[in-house]
Image 1 (cartoon, one colour):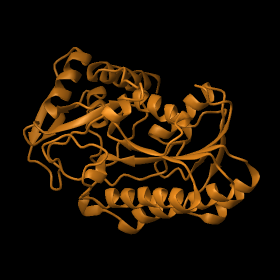
Image 2: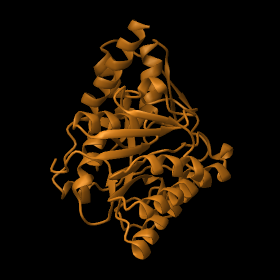
Image 3: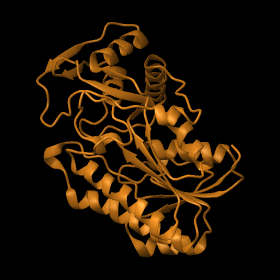
Image 4: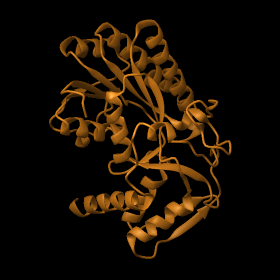
Length: 313
């Protein structure tokens, strides 16, 4: 990287993707300040070389106090909560966490002349699969409150650049998986399979297992998330493998990684499923970024991490 040693704020830095980004930033000799309310993040994920503040990003007074005491160069906004079920969505919470927190951060970034804000969005903004790969300019039609809130936050980032000159990078993460991924309800098929298989329990596949998703290993997602610090033009990117695979193919990779017979049960498809979904990673790849992990390699790393973790505990 050409970006010199900087002071970087990471919201959600005790979470799954956030903690990996913090580790990489510290590895690159940046000074990192983390904000996390620890509702979904875990203190055990926190890099000991980071400075930590326990609190909510949607609290403007809490944020202002931190910005008053630290001069940041960059901000990564990864604080978020993923809803586990369309019937249990908390729309007000989605607005608080994705929208109000983004506005609060942007106002302070403008005030303190921050160089850039990097926002963790989601491919949930596209909605149901439409048969073609979703590109960054595809029509946005989310079916979940989470995706609606992410679009709104994206639009505020564009607003703050247009009127105040605040640079941004919007990263629409696909199904990111890997070590430290928590399991909330039924979110994250690879995390769920990993947990069950490492405990020698049967896995459940909903429907016939033919639904396709785009899965990207967390280390590959972090590679691109760090690269964007160098980009001068505000852009929106799909952070994805660019190739979707079925749940059945995911299960086959687990069978190859675990090297023993696995039990599987099939159940009716759940309400609210988006069906097949795929997105293009061409725009990100044009920057020179490439995912380095096949699905099998990523699942093998993930499974080994949790097996070793269970053996240590």
